Image (cartoon, rainbow, N blue to C red):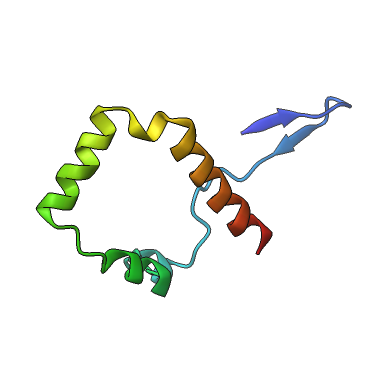
Length: 83
């Protein structure tokens, strides 16, 4: 590939996309998932069908849009930010 610079002198760019050694190219890369202990603790919360139904009802009645609920959430966010 030829790219002309400010002075119109051609600059040549290496067109190879992968500059890794052939041995490294043949190795498969694997994704890794890391779950924090805090996330593990959150996953341990036991949501019973009754509790899930209560949450659904609060969503349907827009309880979480009330000033009371929004203020509680805002207060908890401020506590976390202050840490």
